Image (tube, rainbow, N blue to C red; front, side, top):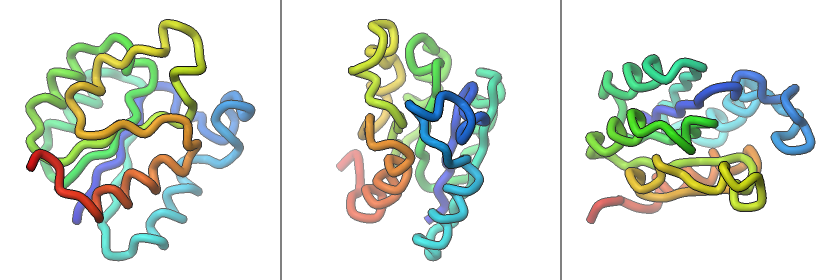
Length: 141
């Protein structure tokens, strides 16, 4: 299975950004662990701070499933939400922190309604849990 893991704005700073919330492991280091744990999966990673670049990457349609952490775009990007709505493949939204324990504006996801599942508050392990969910379930049945 070819899985696209896509991260939105400021997630390029994982490992150094607010470690009390996001931890001290970079996405690149975590991705190496994921790849070794799931050798039968082709895990591809993309990150951008630019909304249109995220949409362009999703529209390439060269994956079997997507795991997305839209970052701050979660809360207001109807453009990413519309893009996700048009993808007819398994989609899991991941949030490192529990967005429901954060500021009020972070507690709403406009993108989640166009995904099959949401994981929030599991730290970086949310990405691993998302891959596991793709292995064990077929969404949209």
